[in-house]
Image (cartoon, rainbow, N blue to C red; front, side):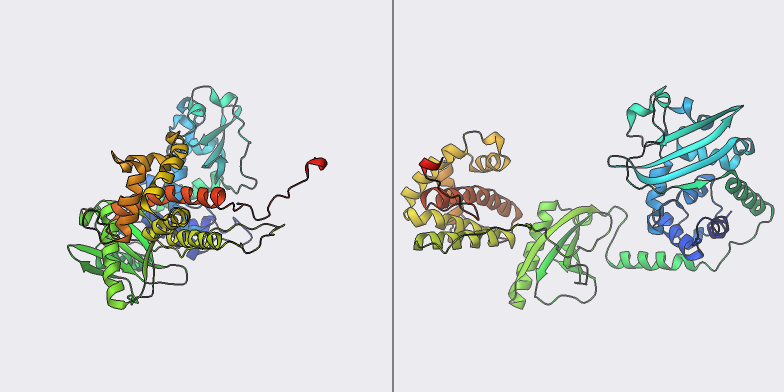
Length: 481
């Protein structure tokens, strides 16, 4: 049987499966998803290749998810389910659900024993999707074989089927698809007729048009079989290409994607093709954005991202989490002290600088808060040393402190903060250069910024006496306590 012929057979089999029957477009979308997962033949030249029993089984499993675009993913999950109690407790000794379905497709006597096969990709256990129940007869005995994830190791041991609660479901609502013996009889008939009356595959091959267009797109973007892409978003007003494109920057090739309703502008780097680590690639992206900023005289801020995809993936627009409160209480006034007002302004500036990837300015802002009370270097360093002795008493309890003390090396922490951080970012120092594009330097400053933020909060709360609560506690007279 050919892949396109199988689509028509599945449409016919599913016509009575719901009040809204499965149509040809639905099955075609499932086939596209299965091809993308390598579960059906890919490329137009393979459309006349007969399907294996394993591929037909994957197409059957692909009928289970509600969304047809998840058919390939569901086939992977369901096909690898294992029988509770091990192979000895399985249907006809099959080690996986795939082998059980293949037996039903090829063994008429097995179909005679079948009563029903129920499949679901609902969450069966916490963070574990997929389950199946195969009801069959064993002589005069009616049996039920359960299939679960291979990660449920204890359930795969011999004898586990005797105590397993087969009807116990985790999800509040679970959808399942039930296959009867009639379905497998229809499939067997279709396969037999396909072999008895050979002919060309149905259709004109248009099902491969989308795949070919996608492959052409990937070729244009420099995607290789071994590609591993870093994807990072960019917030910018510099001129950006309207269409995705591949550009050369130095010895590297970068993929640029435009801003859309759902995605931000983004830069993508093939780590393997360019022989870069994640950190090296991020530095290259920063260098690229620095050039664009200079040429366009506009801001260009690199946002978050990830790596590991075999193709470049558009970065979703940021939708940051926020905190709300039904009973929002606030009873604070503008501070009367000029020192306090400046300290709070600097703290806000530091926090905003961290959020917009300007960590060097965050370092300066937090240090300026310390300088409000200790404006000269020696006094500031003495205060820092005193406070760090308290903060760093147990650095292993806080990974931020552990990283900071590691960065300090043999240098005293207070000297490191003053010279390697404050002076380095405030001046174009020859002895302490700070490169704002270098990801190693950015990581170092982020570590220092974390510690300086803690010190700044201590300064504002302890020495300037500013409460950290939105609704200050009421001082109750001692006679009323």
